[in-house]
Structure formats: C-alpha cells, structure tokens
Image (tube, rainbow, N blue to C red; front, side, top):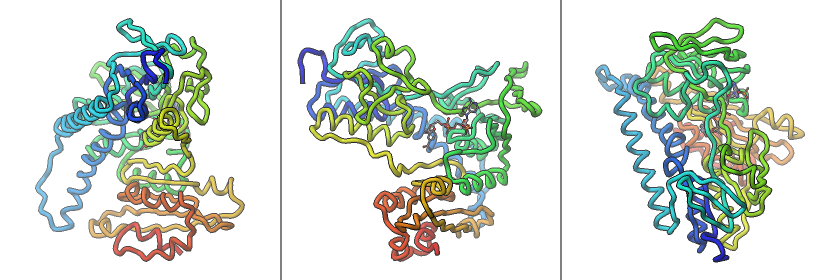
Length: 449
Ligand code: NDP
C-alpha cells in the first residue's frame, strides 16, 4: 500500500455497502476514510428497510387486535396514535445511526460528514473545499426515489418523507406496483387510510411468480385496497383545501390527501464528477463495473445501488465485503448473484427464491410445480378468510428444487431457511424425506405431493 496518497481507500457514501467496505478494508490494514453528506447508515437504516419494517409491525397490530377477540381476549376499542409510532421508529433509527458511526470509529475509519466529489482519478474534493487523495476511490452513493416528469409531480412525496408524516392521510394514492407501493399500501391501509394503487401497466410486482402476485392482488382487493391499472398520470393539481386532484389518462381523476411516488429508484451519480474523470455510466445512469466492482477508471470502484445490479441491502453488503477482501484481505472474492432470496413486506408478505414458474418455462426443458393453497390455522380460528400459497418449482431432469415462492404470514422468515436448500441444490425427494414439524405453516414445504 502506498503512502503517496492521503488514504489507501476513500469511500463515498456511508450506507450498508460503503460502511461494510470501509470497516472491513480498515480491519485488513488499509488507511480508510469515508464521506457521507446525510446520515450514517444510508437508505436501509435511515429511510428504508429498517423503519419500514417497524411500520409493518406497527400496522399488523390492527389485524392482531381484531383477531385477538376470537382467541378470547376482551379488547376494548383501541385507538392508533401515529405520532407515537413515528417518533419511536425515528428514535430507533437514531440509535442505529450511532451504532454505524461507532463501528467506523472502532475500526479507525476517518469520517467526513460532508459531500465529496471526485476531481481526479485519485482526488476527492470535500464540500468545505479541502482536497484529499486516495489510491482507490469506492463510490457507494446508493440510489434515490425516481419522480416522473409529470406536471405537479412536486405535490407528491417519496418513501423518504413517509417516515416523517405529521398524520396518516385519510386518502392516499400510490404510484407504481412494485415493492414500495405494495408495502406502503399495506401499512397505510391498516392505519385506516383509503389507499389506491395506480400502475402504468397491468400487473403488480412484475418479477414475482404470477400465482403469488395474483394472490396478493386478490387479498389486497378483499381488504379494501383499490387498484387502477394501465393508468398513466397526466397531472397533479393541488387544491385550495390542500388536497390533491390526480388526473389519469383514460379514467376519472382521483382526489387524495397524499400521493406517494414509488416508481423505482435512480442511481445517485449526479454531480459526483464521475463523467469528468472518465467513469462510464450505463442505463439509468448507473456506474458500469466489472465482476470485481472496478469501473472504467482503474482507481475507481463502485458497489451497491449506484451500480443498479440488484438493488437490495444484503447484496450491497456482500459487494462491500468482496471488494474489501479482494483489495486488502488477500482473498479474491466475487459475489454470487444466483438464487438471491427476496421479500415484499406487504400484508401478508411475499417471499421468493430462484426461478418463478414463468422463468422455469423459459429456461428449463421440463419442470414440475407443487402448490399448497391453505388457510393457516390461526386465520381459521380468527375467522379470517385469507389463504396462503406456497409453491415449489422442480427441474424434472435433475429433480432439484429450483424455486420457492410463498405468500402468507411470516413467509420471509420461513423462506430465508428454505433458500439454503435451493442454494445447496437439494432435490424434491430430499425435501420429502424431511419429517414435518407439526403444526406449523412451514411444514407445507415438505408435504407437497
Ligand atoms: P420497483 O422497481 O419495485 O417497482 C417500480 C414500479 O413502478 C413498477 O410497478 C413499475 O412498473 C412502475 N414504474 C416504473 N417507472 C414508472 C414510471 N415512469 N411511471 C409510472 N410507473 C412506473 O420500485 P420501488 O420504487 O417499489 O422500489 C425500488 C427498489 O427498492 C426495488 O426495486 C427494490 O430493489 C428496492 N426495495 C426493496 C424492498 C424489499 O426488499 N422488501 C422494499 C423496498 C424497496 P412496471 O412493472 O411496468 O415496470
């Protein structure tokens, strides 16, 4: 490692990927600095996965309190207090932010709490004007919510603002049919908000198995969430009373108190000086990198959402770890992008790993599907007519289970473990040889015939 530079490694962005790369590189002996213009922890910790999951927990009490009556609990009328949940969640986020800072401090990573711009292949200029040099620069600036170019779009909010609302809106329109749309639709609906999802296409959660997403649609409609498909936005008008009139092409306008844009996330590559130093950007202005996270400029690397490969926190963390181990740990490592499990924390949640039935149809010679469509025991007693669906996709030639797709209570908790079996290439008969754990929902995974 060279002393010709101020640092061996300068990381821009202290999100999940950047923090992992910085602390592991420092633990391997590199002299590391990190710059963050907002808050330590990045999207996942500050305004993404973590606070969202806490809101999902908070929202689910609406159903649990209702169901409790069927289990003999005399629940007097309950009132939900949004400011209590919001402030408790924000306090937890602050605690986690402190932990992230501690981790970096303990590993002797120098922290600059300001914006950093690349001004040369080995030079960084901070917002206060100071110039620093590093043998390697790692860009881990993540992504931000996309807002479409529609007149009045500024009257809407993004997921960033959802954690700070003054009150739960009475009526909300959510644009998009992906992760954020379905997760916030579930949350707001449980808090008694009238929700309408407006999607440009004719399906939600395009990348998930068709049967599973149809089940979510069916359950969401039964709960009372509204959907409008094939409905592009024309304009948004803010009215005198503060409400919004949302005009859609080909259908009548919708009035709402809140409009949430959930139409994807764009890599944060603006104003970083990337193009000036020759870093090549691809589709959606993401940084193009090779299998070792190296950009077109040899001293500049990138990981996480800014590369728009797989926009998931655990993937960014793996990329950060692989980068650090390869560069400073004498352990060349590449991330394996196959069979990455994922989940949608909708009500009920979806979880999935491997090939969907549609992908199996396209990729495999012959395949077989096994489906269990059941009402969880707890829902039966609660009088809740909400069915779960588990699905296995099996490659007929190898007999390996190549996909598992689930919707139902705790599906993500169950799938994380089942994903090990798919990753390990276990066969359907190995699933069948495993004795069921009764009575559970997950036993369905070993009982499908
Ligand atoms: P998604 O990519 O999940 O979904 C975007 C949705 O918006 C799709 O329905 C898409 O339609 C639609 N859309 C895209 N562009 C436009 C446009 N210009 N006008 C109208 N509609 C549009 O994005 P999200 O914003 O929900 O989430 C961003 C990313 O964050 C996710 O992809 C995921 O990687 C990550 N995330 C992960 C979570 C998790 O792991 N649980 C939770 C939240 C976010 P179409 O299908 O037609 O393209």
